[in-house]
Image (cartoon, rainbow over all chains, first blue to last red; front, side, top):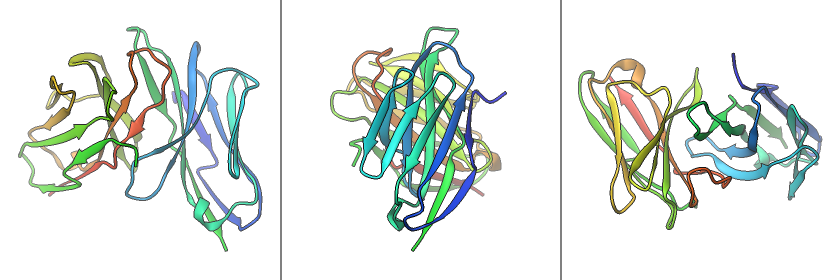
Length: 113
Length: 115
């Protein structure tokens, strides 16, 4: 069973059309939820870390929020350069005591001009 | 630029062969993580090293091994390669403290193609 589920798998928007991406998780003992952006052929680029329910972070047109079971990445008035895959990862305490981030499969976002 | 360097960028090899992927973490980072990314599996954690010692293992095959050297660079060795090993292999590093909440910073990966 996936611990981190992202939806939708793919999203097509018109430039300026705001929307939200969802990341739901089933782990307990959350030690951080991370959002990354990944461009084709590149490594994931860190965007935000959220630690507790109610926390919000913003960067340009992106805003990330966190509840006890999910996180949203809101994209306001997106531009074509926001096209990328957005990955969510959760860090929690593994049975062996390690803190390894587990990634969702991502949402592929395409913004049309 | 994340500060994490991976070489080579591309690798094409035949089944049954052995390859070594190299990673230099960000300056000051003690933890190195290896992930495999394929189209059908997403990012899968392989192994973590902290200051030269193995700290956590994920779904890493017995044919794969890794190490972290005193200068903190890391190598991932893949042997007896199979077609299914074709994927992007990413290295990431994070700040001091294996349990720290600092995010992972990724390199741009090595694309391995096994023919």
